Structure formats: C-alpha cells, structure tokens
Length: 101
Image (cartoon, rainbow, N blue to C red; front, side, top):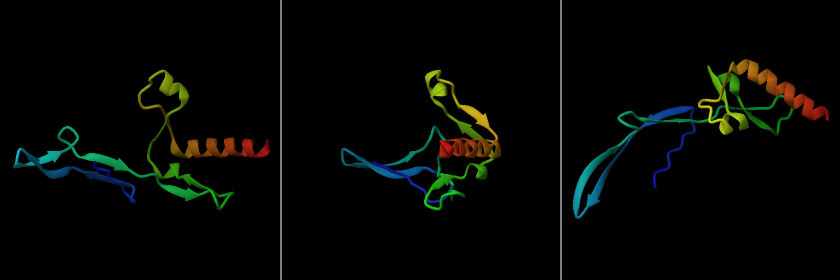
C-alpha cells in the first residue's frame, strides 16, 4: 500500500518501482494518466477568539469551492465557488450566531 502525505501545502509526485512477476523484475511508473498525482494539505490558523481552536485558513487560497449536502445530493460537480475572504466573513458571522445562542 502506498500512502503519500505532505506537511507542506502542495506537492506533485509519481511512483517509480520495480515489479517482480514470475521472477522477472520490470520497472514501472505509476502516475495519474500521464500526469503526476497532486496532493494538497490544508493551511491552518488559530481561531482569533479561541486560542485552543484551529481552523482552516481559507483566505490563503485563491479560489474556494464549498461542498454542501445539496451539492452532494444533486451531484453538482465542484460545489459552490466562493471568494475566500467572503467565505471567511460568512463563516465568522455564522460562528457568532452560534456563540450567542
């Protein structure tokens, strides 16, 4: 089993290995249909109001796609596109409402 991970924000990779079949060693390249695999890590930050809470720093991204239950149920590819700063404000407003309840 191959399990790629990254501590950074982004990497691309292909696997190169030797496969042994019936005693014959054959080099093999495993990729994503001729392109490298891509892996993203979430960029995190500490919540402004709670030092013990870590959140995803959505403002660090150029574009944000948000998947909701409706997106999944309707099989809407890509989810809803948001401006990261606008999403951050909307999410903060939502958390404020929850804290006030």
